[in-house]
Image (cartoon, rainbow, N blue to C red; front, top):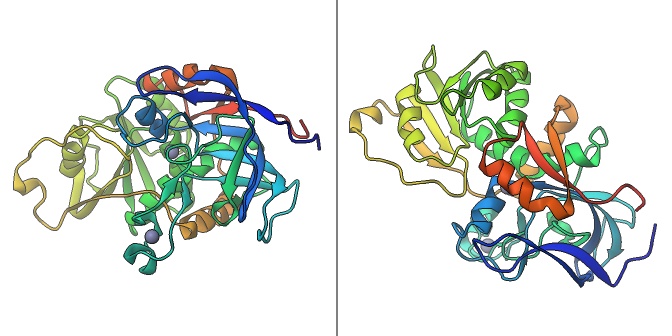
Length: 339
Ligand SMILES: [Zn+2]
Ligand SMILES: [Zn+2]
C-alpha cells in the first residue's frame, strides 16, 4: 500500500449554488475512534444535489460532498476495534450520533438531535481520502466491486429502510426509478413482491429499464397503475406525486416519502386519505438498517448499474442526475485497488 500523502485532491463545495471546485487540500488524519480511508469510489446521490443547490441549508463550508464511500483503511485511530489496515469498508450518510439524546435512547439514532452527516456536516468522499468514525462504517459483501458497491451505501440503504416501512405490501409502486429504485426493485422481486415503476411522463427508456429489472408494470407517474398498490415509495422529490401515490394505494395502504427534500405537497381531498391510508417520511438510517441491508445484499446479489465519472468531473455527474440522464447510479471512480 502506498504511503498516505500529505495533500489530496478533493472536489470542494465552497458555497451553495456554485459548482464544486477542484482543490489540493491537507489529507485529514484519523483521530481517536476514526479510520482514514483511501477512497476507491464514491456514489453521487440526489441529496448531494440538494446540498450543492442550497436546498439543504446547513452544510459545513467549505465542504467535501459524498456519502456513499467505498474505501480501504490506511490509518487506524486509537481505540478502533475490528478494522485493520487494508480492510474495505463503506461509509454512509449517518456519520455520528451522540448516543444519549431521547431518540438515540429509544433506538431511533436516525433522528438523533446532534447527528452528524457524511458529506454534509462532516467531509465526505469526493476526495482521495476520507475520515470516518469506525462505528458507523460497514463491511461490504465481497461479491461487489468498488464501483458497484458504492450505490448500496445510500441508494440501497435508504431505499431499504423505506421498503421496511412499506411492511408486507405485495404490490409496491416505486415513484422515480433512479439509483434507489433500481436496487430496491431487485430486492422486492427477490422477496416475491410485485414492483410497479412510475416514472416521469413519457420516459420510455426508464420504463424499459424498470421492466428489465423485473417490474411487472412501468408507466407514467400521473396515471393509475393497473392494480391498486399496497404501498408506494417516493424517490422523486416532487410533492405532487404524494397525492398521485395516495390515489394509487388501496385501502390501508401506505405512501412512504424516502427523499430528504421535496417540493411542497399540494392540498387534496380528505377522501384520498380516508380508509386508513397513511403517509410517512423516512429520515436517514440506523446502523441496524445498514447491517441488515448488507446481509440482504450478500444474499440477493443486486446488479447495480453504475456510471463512472472521474473525481474531477463530479459537477458533470451532478448535472446528469439533475437531468435524469443516469440509468441507475452515478459513481466517482477515484482509486484503483492498491493505488
Ligand atoms: Zn442522539
Ligand atoms: Zn444519499
